[in-house]
Image 1 (cartoon, helix red, strand yellow):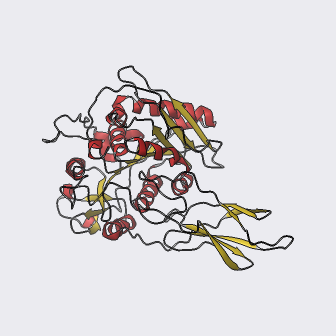
Image 2 (cartoon, one colour):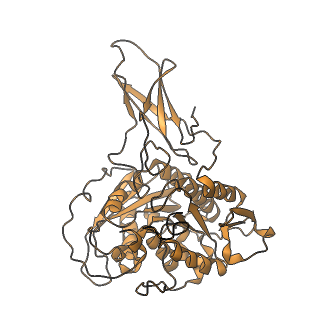
Image 3 (cartoon, helix red, strand yellow):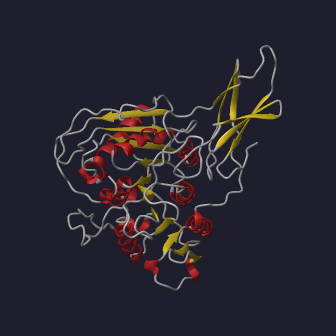
Length: 439
């Protein structure tokens, strides 16, 4: 589904055993844990089967939160959710803040109504919290059941994250809504939409409404043109109440996620830094009142909040000047600057002709590729030609809902030109998506 993702029609569906792609997913061995639930015929419970996969950072004794990466509607997007917890870039964000990374994958048949899961009131909100409890037991991290949530969602996933933010604002650190929101008002052209009730707590939660320019912002009659007419009143309503909400427009895309992660991850980094309590179990901290900046979408203007004197409801709230500058760069051409090289790879090992290693992603710019040096000379790039039809080329590739491609690429290289019984010195160098190289 596309534009209909923002329409929450509650239609009946006949459940049946699911065929691939729902049974094709990476193995979940520690530090990954997975749990699956069957769908239910009971009214008010989740109708579709669903899998939740969580990644726990190494060396973290007590988790402080969980980053949730939620795919959109339809079988293709559901398939993409199977790899969400394996994304090295999102793992870097989670690890920095001692958070788990969780990715659901709903088994929605191709002709079924998306609202049966993307509206959390239809059982998916309760099932998510049940999964956190069960994964807490499975992973040996009991705190996982009660830690705060940082929510990212695409399309129908944006509806779900927005709905969870309105239902449980006290649990949500921040919420990024790509191409979908939880409706607060009925629209004249969609009188069948089931709206969410206003919750005063939502004004304290940082929210980013992110969409492509082809989703009704500049293209008014395209396939996805119904998104902006729903996002705009949602943003204005929350902003007019003093809410910490912003709009960011990708100038290069319509419904696909594009390069949004290069703004989303630094934005979450800032919000997590400000809101997570030092000790796990404490209440979320309010965002600091000082240092905020306001932005205006129409002219890309950014200014310190203290210096702004215009219409508050027309502005986008940003936590600080650094994020405001990143927002402006993203809005221009998505080329957010980065001057920090990625972390160096680690744990290199050679067995015969096969070289393996591990690496963490650069928080700002992810990983594009690895260069393999032998005796001081670059002999290979892994992958040879990084690809990504939705944005910057990435080592892991990228699917429609911002998750790694399958099968997952491995950090390994076979040196077919190595001569038997001859010794070599190898080095592995990480390259991020703006071309900076690691040690």
